[in-house]
Image (cartoon, rainbow, N blue to C red):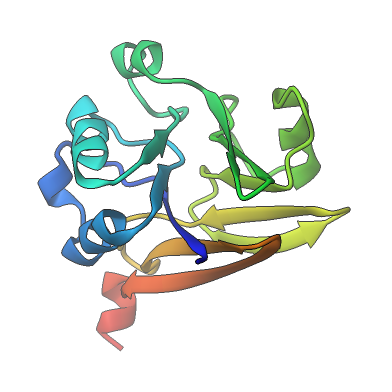
Length: 172
């Protein structure tokens, strides 16, 4: 049976109830739910942990010091033999080459789940799948998005889903 991993990032909310209901539903129904950082408040981390069957969380560059000290910067999980690294680049700033994420992991992962860019990325480079779910809220022109990673006996597939349109897109 395949393992379904729901990936969320950059929600920038104060409370779990502020997260779009469809994202909360997908998190609750996943085998594993991953949040790639930038929650803003610990209540979102706690909501994710209590809603998910299994939650993997890392902090982001916009998270306050108390949240950063409570959860890791990087995490690695192995699912069906697939090594999956989770990170939110601490240095922040503009986009950078995706390969710059690799030195933060002790061993080269098969998949890197990451946040920060607020834009979706689903791209393989040199045998590593880089998956950024985008932002977990809709803003003026940018939709709320998540990613779903499926591991099935060594086969890895990923898709990005739009959850809610950006407010600017809804007006057109």
